[in-house]
Image (cartoon, rainbow, N blue to C red; front, side, top):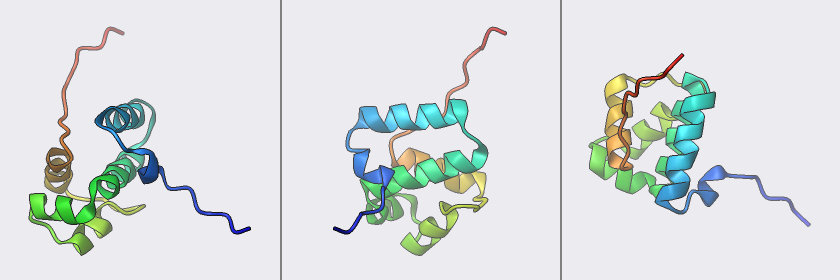
Length: 94
């Protein structure tokens, strides 16, 4: 029996799961984790669809959202918008 590689994108099958995943990474992860998570979501939705909505090529998207990449903020915002996300700032009581 051959084992298959775990891919989180296979489990991001609803808006609720995507939101929970991204918010968890935002709260607990690093910048690199967030870029990777956005890439997982883009893959789950469909890289071709995200490429069309952002005006970026699929190759550019894969490169920008790959491990150890440092995409420009503009690219991150375009992809977030294409996946239906947005950033919000909340007051945190410390």
